[in-house]
Length: 201
Image 1 (spheres, one colour):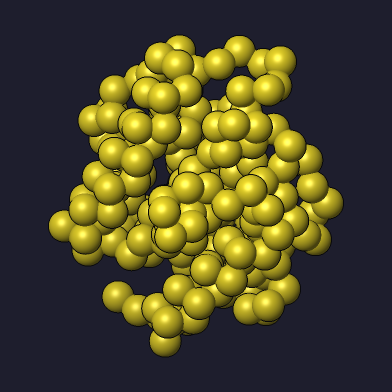
Image 2 (cartoon, one colour):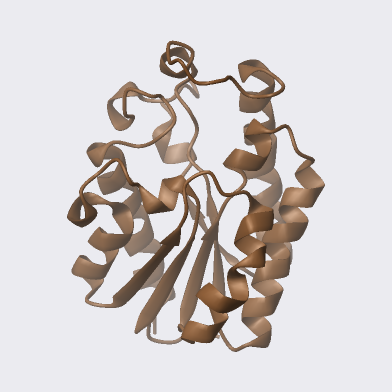
């Protein structure tokens, strides 16, 4: 059901929390500013979709938002967790949202810039970078398909970060290669605003 948005909760991990950037420059804040709506950022860095699901009721349902944008899975894949588990967690949240009269949206997570990430001193993904990137691509396609089948609107934060050859565009990433920089957050905000404005009635 389409309706006007007064309150939107962005429920996710570090791609939503964006602790490395100033609050006004991150995509949830930009959406709030441009659309003149209340946006609650419930992103927690490092969280998996199981974590998102466990805090969905207290951090989303109890706030009674009009809409919730759910985006996760990147950290699950870092630990090489099963794709079906990730999908199950995400769409369990969309079902809970529906049950409580909240309109759910699913965000497709951005890619990573593997060349930069490899240079960092943090531990690499459990299955290695090549498997992580391949699994992320599979997850994005699977989420998009499942969202269409469940009649849940999808926000594509993935493909706009890729060039015509399908490679991540460096100018959109922080030096860690994992998180969008300010330019990346401007891109994400634009995507969200365009999609939400089209859905809003």
